[in-house]
Length: 424
Image (cartoon, rainbow, N blue to C red):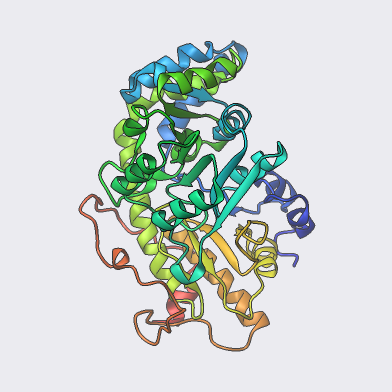
């Protein structure tokens, strides 16, 4: 395992994935790290936007930002929101922390698997966490009626749903989420975490943010870092009626947002078209990547409306071993899901990336299989000879939505050509 020079022991420290910086620092000189672990938007910000940020970096770092209320008002104006319904924080996890401290008093219900802070944070403060297990046989799809029944039986006082859900990418139609909020209007709180909803192309207006702000107990969470591919800035916001939003906002530090976040908020309105294009390109890549992954025999690919896929590895594969092998031999970071409640190490979450990077990922997975397993793992026609476990049927992979723009293929000239040549 000397191709990248990365000591894979860094992947086994702590309960979360190693950071990109940890892996990059451990790599040998000239090693390119391809990140299929952190769910970034690869098309946004654009190179021109990064150039603008670079030009302003000195003043961004040198001077204090505006206070949080000023930045929040600017964001509300850009997004067409009432400023009293918005609270902006240093990442959505900061908002989850304050929601737990201020609004969750006794118990919270949450489907699993999902984003870990929704289970870990309230458990750390001694709340009862009622976990509703999603079933693999259902493709980890959440049945809201069954979930409401579970909430009633457990007498949970707060209910959370993540839409799009991480790590499985399942999307719930807006009308159903609205019914869910109304069915639980007697609870202390109903939270809809929409951190990944911008990546969905299932509906033109998928968010329930406008519906939450006129309800007495509803909160919607948004993550600008995930949407814009700027995790390092750490900024997110919540939508709720003025009483709830104001209660959270009063607890947040006056200068809890940094100058880089403020700069990006001011850039949003000037680059709306580029952002929309980035979502169209990512939607295209999601379908292409889904088809490529489906060609690996024995790999289960779950349909996704996020910027990632959940996959289940063939029985004889090890998720931990594959993760380590890809880093050590191919410079590829992946997310093995063994530390997620409701998952095992047979599951991996793979971020959607452009075609050339996907070729590199698939080649690495095939390389792992050929080195450690003797049977053929590549299916040249995913629509033939595919058993029921090979993939979850989803007509969306075959249907091209009308909001995709034509974009030239990035496959020509890729260094990862051996697999395509081998399969004709």
